Length: 446
Picture: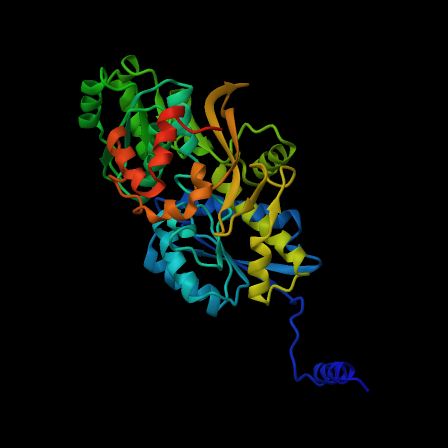
């Protein structure tokens, strides 16, 4: 008898006797969700959770007949609480996958937890700090979402090239996510003909902007437009005071960061939001069958139309389903499950946002949409003005990822907001030839 046959027979006998435990499809698939579902940030956790539930309901909470059990934990927007809840999902509930978290400060803490717990795949909810999938990337954490800079690089270019602005003021909340948004905008704006971006930061929970409005009025003859870089109640307060102080008469418009004109905010802002330009990887007015089906199903299930936040939960669950298909439901092999997740490719027929796939760091390469708020049939919604296809988290620097990550991480004042200082800075990392080409071509060459 050949050696190969002997080894085969021994292996079969060992399996029969129970000496080896082969990985097999489980009796129950256990999915954990983590995010804020109470408190000031409820919308960011709850809408991700709603998206997950909708995707699960479409399959009757089953995968190939195997029941799926969903566990959800409220972080209360507190990092220490989140760490405890992650431990609970892993050790008490024995989940095979965690979806979340949804806030920026939670995201960076989740990366640290994932590095210590590489046997639990994490699909990020709505959390967008760059370094989750850049400088601090860890293999078990995959983000089917976005980074703060990724979705706004090209908006900076659009404002410089298409709108013709030379100088812009950014007014925003003073923490990491708005810093990323400002940085991405600055890069796209200054590299494509813009001259200066002034950043004005305010406390996260501030709602009195009278001093800022007075400052904006005084700067109106020097700057072309103002970009509001806040979220939630602060956006509503800012827009109301903008009109109360008559700034609409001295600036052509307010521009918006990614979260300014999302669906929940449109209901709060009303007609104050009309005409606002912004950019994101999803727009609610997308006429694709996948998005229309998603919107109507979500409204039927939850009584309101969904925002991009809900898309994150919905897409995360569908990514998980595709990965499960690839491994025949063997989710108790975390290494295979994580590899399968990273290899998922979503088509325009499968995702409300459009097609996407993951780069080697675990972040999507996807379409980025320049949007404008309009009113259709009495309803406010975002329509697409321009589409940039297959945008990496590194934006126009996709072939210079290592050089991009060699730069300092984004801060409230980095990168520089004046063109000459900015060009001197990027020359250190991208080289003199890169800067000379920008000047020669007056921007990026598509």
